[in-house]
Length: 165
Figure 1 (cartoon, rainbow, N blue to C red):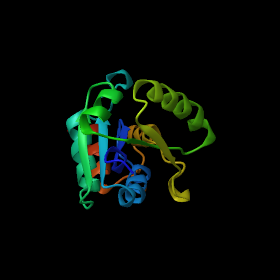
Figure 2: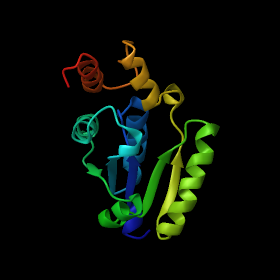
Figure 3: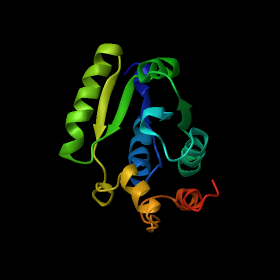
């Protein structure tokens, strides 16, 4: 195992971070010396929560792991992975519908950063249906998202909905 292969990068928009994301980190963290959760700016997605809030919420949710670091980034993922010395890209696959997109992204990343492997993890069964976009929509319409996200995330979404954030 090379030094880089002991550093994994789990990139995403995390808008917001969900219990599914947290489950993936909880299961992946013991497999690597360092796990860097890269929170992407993703302006094309029009995130509901600003980058600094998403980074802060992820740090709160994942702070109990000594080997997990949360960092925001606004560069090409390949550049970010090289910058942090990553050797593995972690991606979650919830359903077959995720596979086509993730396969295409893994293939592109293989061309951009051939020294980095993509590793897919499937969610624990109780989290397979959760997505950030569904959580945002439920929250936007006044629904209870507390079963899908940490309490701090639920509070941040509620504050945003009420115009306090």
